Image (cartoon, rainbow, N blue to C red; front, side, top):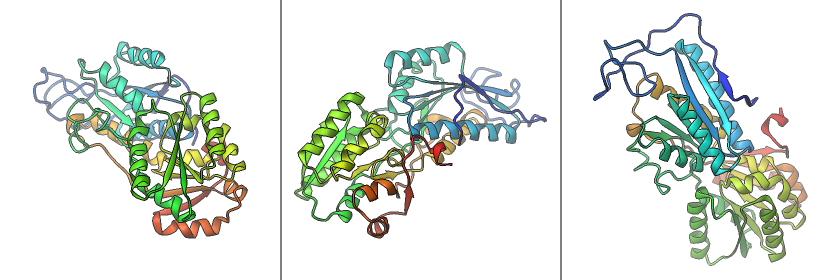
Length: 362
């Protein structure tokens, strides 16, 4: 699916405006509702154009899938509901100063809602909108409770909610040992500064400790550091490497997958985009669907007056294992054998080949 890269993306407006269902908002001034929602019954005129500020954390295949599907789904909803979404899109490329400026620009532009793709963006938006109450919908936040974004998955409790790509770490560990029951040492490759990595790495250590399996940790915060960490793990002679949904490692995967392949080490990861970029396996959610459901949530807040504080965070089945068939062959493994070993532990096992983006596969 093609990613829209312009700063502003305006969804098509249907020819005939649909009268929106109006929902009363307790405590709102007369003639107004929750920011960006239709006015309550008897007060004011519902909007036909909604301004949405969308910020992506980094340029990687999974997050780009989310952005593209948010934009495309909002365009569809706009046609269905007779409204338009004026989407200001930007990407901060993991730069905190740039990210804060993007958010400030959204606020100055008077957006009706902000969308933060990945944990750091969601957290920055949470801080920036604390006083204004502008609704925030996040996407691809692995652990919104532990990071303090929400009180609970069922009742977020503030002005933000969203979709989570929570990772079932134990399931990936089970896949490692299904493929290699004799594995003795597992490498853990991640960025210590990524909040999305903290919980799954802790769970991986718990699993390995409980099963008396040794592990080696290597970390990096830049592409160069990640390269060095990957080379160190190859020198350590680990039997497999695990990386969760870590955006720093994701952006470096194309540069490191051959290090592991040449050393005969399978890289098990927390998203299919890693496998797209050369890792042996990516396990986790469907990021295209994550984007669609994020857009649906935006719609319920802006068009139907849903309150983010009481809108449950959406989580998804982690059961899809994506295997890079080229890497599988380079590691001396047979895809049919791997598929048979993984199938009982997954909802689905699917093949993929190495490319920079999902668009390159079509």
